[in-house]
Image (tube, rainbow over all chains, first blue to last red; front, side, top):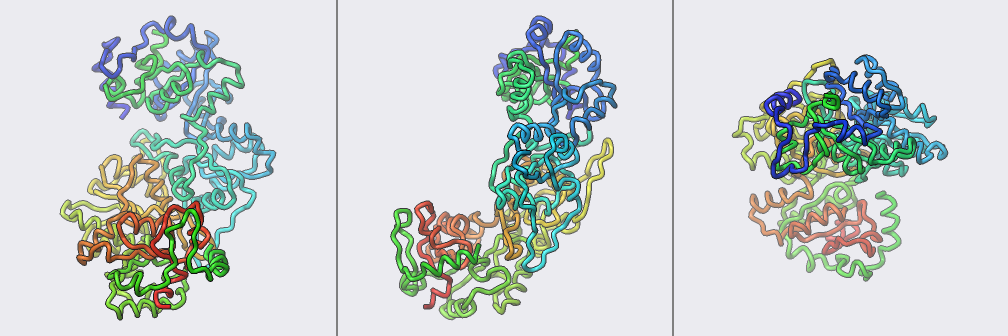
Amino acid sequence: MANAAAARRGSLSMMATVATPGAASVKRLTSPEEELLKNTDVFIFDCDGVIWRGDSLIDKVPSVLEKLRAMGKRMFFVTNNSTKSRKGYKSKFSSLGLDVQDEEIFSSSFAAAAYLEQKNFKATGKKVYVIGEVGIGEELDLIGVPHIGGPADKGKTIELTPGYALEIDHDVGAVVVGFDRHFNYHKIQYAQLAINENGAEFIATNMDAVTHLTDAQEWAGAGSMVGCIKGCTGKEPTLVGKPSPLMIDYIVYKYKIPKDKICMVGDRLDTDILFGKDNGLKTVLTLSGVTSEEKLLGAANKIHPDFFVSSIADFFP
Amino acid sequence: MANAAAARRGSLSMMATVATPGAASVKRLTSPEEELLKNTDVFIFDCDGVIWRGDSLIDKVPSVLEKLRAMGKRMFFVTNNSTKSRKGYKSKFSSLGLDVQDEEIFSSSFAAAAYLEQKNFKATGKKVYVIGEVGIGEELDLIGVPHIGGPADKGKTIELTPGYALEIDHDVGAVVVGFDRHFNYHKIQYAQLAINENGAEFIATNMDAVTHLTDAQEWAGAGSMVGCIKGCTGKEPTLVGKPSPLMIDYIVYKYKIPKDKICMVGDRLDTDILFGKDNGLKTVLTLSGVTSEEKLLGAANKIHPDFFVSSIADFFP
């Protein structure tokens, strides 16, 4: 998909501005200093398709980030992927030669912990049941909230005998559901009982239908695991990752930065750009990921970023 | 739940008719011959809560069925449970001492096969990918439609290496999703690719949130597996079990019976009774399952069967 988009970009990259019926307000960024940099204090970057594609860094990204830092800009890196903690993500940045701080990383695993911290969940003395991988548990450890499930429930099966009941811990006060490649019926039933019978809060790291576990194909995302728990509980989750406003509220509150000084940079119209617009941020779409210029400028597209770029290298032409 | 309902029934069973603001039109069946039997040619019975509870037959059911047969009534037994085929269900009836025919049993596994037969799916030369247990595959075998997945994909895992892609059979033209206690990420991704990339039709046996695998607690139902595939595809399935009208259409078409001569008998307001009413059938709610008389007659209930009974033994007082 990214390759096809890249091929399409090649054929259209000579056009600096394009007027189509559906996209009158979409403009290529041509004077970055004037149009963007001087009015922006914080950049929120989506990672996949913006900073890297799969395991490869996107061209010129390190120098762009360096130049932004030299100008005193603050930056955050967001990802809906909950499989790693912020610490886990820092290793990925380091392996690609990027020096970022833990607190600059907003993974949805961190978002789940930040939400529970904000609610003062710890004071309830309750536990969290986790559907997901190591990232969620690592973030819960950092805020001192006890948790069960997660990787420990990998491979568990339900052996049904007449009268059998799955016993659950009645201290489970929240169920956090994220991407989990070891999802199984034990976990489904545990979550169902905790939510339906304990009254535990149902929290989703994200609801992305597909994700990019490898470059070779799209993979069923956390939307699968969350959809499953919706299906057996009839309940809607509290969403903490994109496009929930929680992360923006957190940045505004913690760093005292007005929203109009924040710019969301992403490669997806219906998640990143919509998320930015819904939260009152400036928005820049980069064509270095899954969105093609045809799609962006087509009449069918109703989601219009303030600017678009071929990649964030266009911030410093 | 059934026990609590039974306890509540006991305290109210002396009241033959009850008038409450929300349930003016709900009437206890008092003259079955006059009110029901003489105008009904076909009875469609939900199984769990009507014929049996878990592994126990409900009192007097064999003699009720015998008397109905002696009167020349036709009967069908419906269940949204897809884990068994009709043949598999016949064994359950036999083990409880009930003599029923294969063609009197409408399991949702059969409904999926009947739907594909009606569409002439076999003529496409395509295969079905199954998320579910043995029942679905057994029914597909009977109509000569090839299938993969199902119990054969139990225990499969995805080992992610850079560039890895799960290869799927490009001849998969439909994905049938039912209850599957060996649900795993391999199955989720297989179904996601078949639907999103092959364009396979997404068929759900049923979307029940919970089911009664054992009497001891409610278990996450096929709504879990279906919700999961909705979550990663963004698509709504074709529903073949209750409350889809497919089964009624099949009975009307195959046996040439007008809908007003058919009565749906069930223990759930929001599935069985709603299903009957939506399809223009007569409806009888039995209190022998999950619905209490208070709930039925309460102002909050907006789903009104034509009659209610303590159990189907009330058909022959």
